[in-house]
Structures are given as C-alpha cells and as structure tokens.
Image (tube, rainbow, N blue to C red; front, side, top):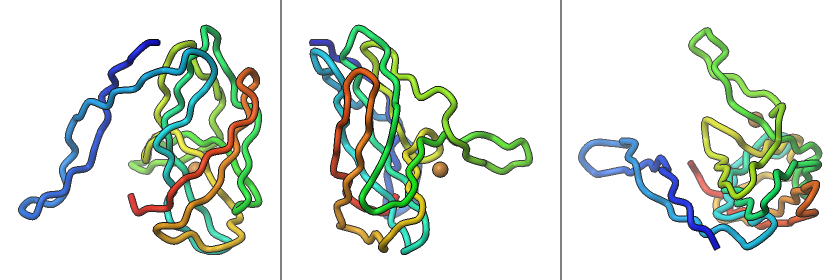
Length: 152
Ligand SMILES: [Cu+2]
C-alpha cells in the first residue's frame, strides 16, 4: 500500500470575496494492483450536446497502463481529451495523444485539463443525475463507474 499526497486546486467560495483558488492536500491510497477510479463527477449538459467527466485515476500497478476505449450509455461518442493553450488567449481541447497512466501514480482529470468528453448526449444531464462511464484499460480491463452530475 502506498499513499500519495497530491496538491489539488479547489475552488472555495466565500460570502465576501467570490471564488478564489486555494491549494489543498488530497490524500490518495493506491490500490495494491490495477486501476481504481475515484471522485467521478460530470458537468450538466443538453440533449444532443456535450459534457465532461472528471475523476482521479489511481494506478496501483507496477506497470504503465493505457486507456484503450471509453463508452457511456448517455453518449454516442466518448473520447479522452486534453485542454491546451491555442496561443491566441483561447483554450482548445483535443483528443489526448498519450493516454498512458504511469506505474504507481495518480492522474487527475479536472476542469482545464484532462477530461472524458461526452458527445452526442442522448438525454439532458441535470444536477443530481448519476451516469455510467466505462473505461477499458489494456491491463486493468473494463471498469465502469458512476459519475454524479454537478455544476463545476
Ligand atoms: Cu473535451
């Protein structure tokens, strides 16, 4: 068992000063082997629209794992995306080129970074809904998680 401390950016809202990013420590306990997916949540979305799912990917294996496939019952198309600076003061997103998860590591998907992109939503996603997402890894195999829909 290995524990990793990772700084996580949290948006903390206060009555007085709006939202300010703050550093907080989030403690993860890696599984003894294989992949564990924790804290999954999804953005609200419109029917025929898009949404994004965020989570932490805990790879407890001594080997690198690779994401092979993604699916969800609420989306016609699901891809792993990364956010990047387009260079014109705009952020773009594209399919992640290297969906690799290093041995004994935590990879965090979060707004402004890596995310699971849901496209062609077959229904609206509203706050409080729970949706399924299935990630298929080369080593760990198929893992289905439930993600709660909430506003960022
Ligand atoms: Cu995206």
